[in-house]
Image (cartoon, rainbow, N blue to C red; front, top):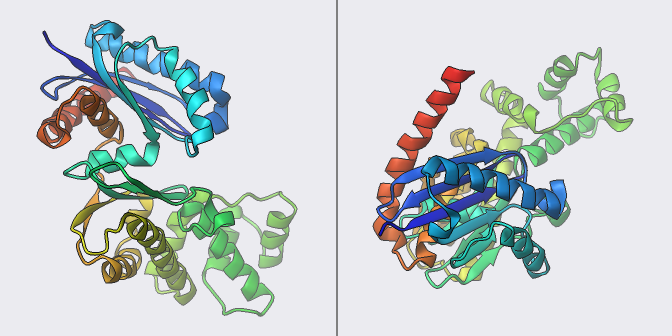
Length: 334
């Protein structure tokens, strides 16, 4: 009898469910909006879980009682105190199988690391870094951003750019092309209007401005270049903390990179890699090229006593094709 495995990726902007059979073939998919309890509450988490799971089950043509193992990567699940309400939300799915619940960064690690263990470094809207060894001993950062000194996703990079603009205007720092670029973006007449608008809450610089900083750096602006290098070094600092917690300094392991910041080219990547390799020469850098929900399915398969290493390749291949086909269908219906 065929067994099926469920993976769920709960995010702060969107959530996915993916079902695969016991050969690693993707057969069902569901998608909905945010499920992070910090965004929608635990009732919202419960609702999103039910919606995406039902959609994936319907597409697969199976009943929930045919699920033999399930993995959940949940954004906002950071501390032991959050496990009980998270499990309560999951219980609404009515599953009768072993499950594994982790922070959503971990499923990116499982999806990208060949053996299912190592370190995952996330740099998108913000940043995060978690890792575990082959025995699932965990290393992590707090995941709280700038107030805990954890940098640098797009949000933190833009914040540093605003500081650089303020320093130019107050003559505490050098001139930078960031100033006229931000003025043009917000359509204001001068730097004073830009800074006033930000301070009084009329203007809202956010992560969407990060690509502009990279463009200015590539055009040769020294201040923007220094910010990109800073971001690379800060991301390395996150990874090195987790590497030390896990004792990976002398080990060979996959370091999975997930998020749009890693599209930033050598100005970001070179200082980051150099710093990490000084700490852990055996780190192998791997860009995550599949949806993290694939890692959640692999965790589900592990709960069903299947080997992550044995089934990862087939699941990655079939899920890519499956999700590409689903996207093509959706595009044709749009």
